[in-house]
Length: 626
View: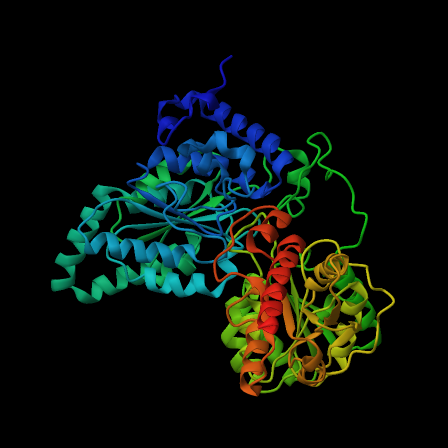
C-alpha cells in the first residue's frame, strides 16, 4: 500500500487526498512525527494533538493566500509537513536547519513568527485590518491553545477583535482545560441556523423592519434570545464580548472542523471555534505523560524513555533542592511560576508545600505584580521563570517591584544560549534589561554550590534580587573556592598579572579553560568570578587595573547594554587607559542549534576567546614597543 504522506510534496497537495483516506493520512503523520522527533527532539505532544485540526484547516483554506497564525507555534509540525517541508525534518531544530516554530523566512505559509504565548489573536487582528484596508478578501485564522488563553494579552486582543466588522476566525484548541461541556445536538443545531445565509438574511430583515415600528418588541426578543443562549449555548463569555462562538467541535473529526470553518467564513465579524483535542494523541507515552513530551529530547519510541542518562545534576535540579531547603527554614518563602512548574524545577516544591506554590498560568506580567503584592504583604516570593519569558514583564519588574524596593527574588532559568528552541527562547538579554533598572541586584553563580549560596543570600537581602543561571548540567568545578557571598563583591580565584579575565556566571567555566590555554603560551592571567553584575565590584577593578593592561569581560549575554558595556563605561569615566575586550554575544538574534555550535558562531567559545585575547595582547605589545 502506497504511503499517502509521500504524495504531499507542496502546499495544497492534501486536497488531492480523498476524504475516505484522511484518517489514514492522519495516522501516517503521527507515525512520522513520533519517528522523527524521537531522533531530533522537539515538541511532540502538542503536535500529535493538532494533526486533524491542521489537516482540516489546510483542506478548508487556500494557502498561502489564506493565512494562519499559530500561537506559540510549537504545534506547527503538521503544518510544515503539509507545506512541503517533510524532507527537512531530519534537520529540525539543528543549526542551519528547520525551525521548531513558524518562520516567515522558511515558507510563505508561515505568515507570522511565533514562539512566545498569547500573541496570535493580536497578530490576527492586525492582519485583518491590513487585509481590509487594502481591499483584499482572503481568510485569516488565529489558532490559540487553552493554555495560551491564560495570558492577558489574549484578552486584550479579544476585546479588540470584538469590534471587527469583517471576518476573522479564532480557533481555540482546547486540549486540557474544560472550558465548556459539549451539549451535543442542540449546540450543533444552533450553530447551523446562526451561521446560515438564510438565517442571517432573515434575521437582519426582521430586525430592521421591527426596530422601526416596534422597538420594545425587539428589545424583548433580544433579551429572550440572550436568556436562551445562556441556557443552551456554551462560550457565553465570548458571545457577551461580541464574538460569535461555535462549538465545541471534536478536534479529531476533520469533517466537523471543516464544516465549522466554512460556517465561520460566512460571518462578517470575529468568530471563535472551540475545538476539543487530546495532547499526545496516538502515542501512548505522550498521552499518558503529555507534559514530559511537551518539549523532549531524543527518546526510545518503544518505551518513551529519554536516550542516555544524566551524569550530573542540572542547574534546575540544584535550584529545586535549594528551594525546598529554604522553605523548610523560612516559612515566608513562596514560589510562583507562569505555567512552567516542571520546567523551572518546582514540581517537588508544589507537592511538599501546595499552599505556598502558585501557578498563575502563562501570565508573566501578572506573576511579577502578584509577587510584588505578596512581598508587600510580608512574604518572600521567588518568581521562577525562563529568561526569555521574564522579559515580557519588564515594566512590572521596574514599576511594581523595584520602584517600591520590594523583596522579590527572581530565579531566572535558561539564561544564556538555550539551543534548539532558537531566537524566541535564547536567554541572552536579561543582564542588559535587568541592569537598566534602578534598585535591582543581579547575580550569576559560577557553579552549583554558588547557586545555593546566592539563593540563601537573596533570602537574607532586603530588596529585589535576580539570580540568573543557564540550562543544562551544572558546573561542578572550582569546588574548593567558596567564600561567603558579600553584597557587590567579586571573587578573585587566581591572581597573577598582565591579563584579567573578568567572567560572569556560566562563562567562569570557559574562563578557566581560556586561562589554561593562555598559560600554555606563556601568558599569566588573573581570573575573577564577577558574582555580581549589578552592582559590580569597582574596588577590585581599581586595585587590579594598574597591573593588568588588558581586561577581558566575559558574559553569555548580548554585547549591547551588557556587563562588558558597563565595565567599559566605568574605565572611560575614570579615564584609565587599560584595554577592555568585551567577550559577549553579538548584537543580533541567535537562531536555533546545538549550544556548542552556537557558542562558536557567536564567538564565546574557548578557542575563539583565546584567539581574540592573543591578538589583543599582541597589539598591546606592539604599542608598548613603540
